[in-house]
Image 1 (tube, protein in one colour):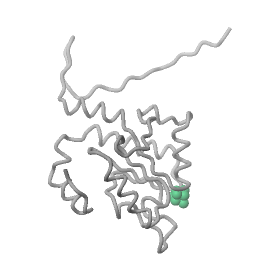
Image 2: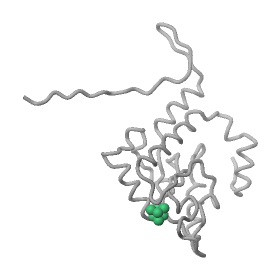
Image 3: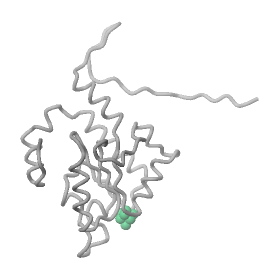
Image 4: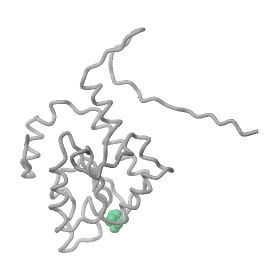
Length: 187
Ligand code: SF4
C-alpha cells in the first residue's frame, strides 16, 4: 500500500487590520503591499558564476516559486526587481542602467555576490566596483558566490520592503533626491 503522505499548505498572514467575526478591514496600502510582496517579478541580469547559484535557487530544491517569484521577466517593463548577479564591466554599466531605467516604478534592485556589490576580486581598470555606481541598490548579498539560502534571505528582505512601502515613497523628497543623485529622470 502506498505510503500516505500529508501535505502542509500554509497561507500567507493577512495584513495588519481590524477583525471581528464575519468581517476584516485594513488599509488599501496594506492590501496592495501584501499582493505586491507575494508576486515580485524578477528581471535577472546574470553575467557570470553568481548566475549559476541563481539557477540553483530557481530549481525545484530551493524553488523561488514558493515566494511568488517564479515568473522571470526578461523584459524590464514587466518586472519589479532587478537582480544583478556577476561581474559587471565598465562597458556593461550603461546597459545595467538602461535596463533599470526601462523598469516602471515601483522597482527594487538586488546586488548578488561580491562582484555586483563591490567588484569583488576584480579590482581592475575594466570592472565596475559595484553596481551602486550606476543604479541605487536596495539589498546587497555578500559572498563569492552566495549560497541559494542567502539569495532567498535577500528576496525575503525585498519582500519585507515591498510589503511595507508607502504609496507616497516614490514621490517623497528623499526618493527624488536619490534619483537626482544618480542623474535619473523622475516621473
Ligand atoms: S562574486 Fe564570485 S561567484 Fe559571484 S560572479 Fe563574482 S567571482 Fe563569480
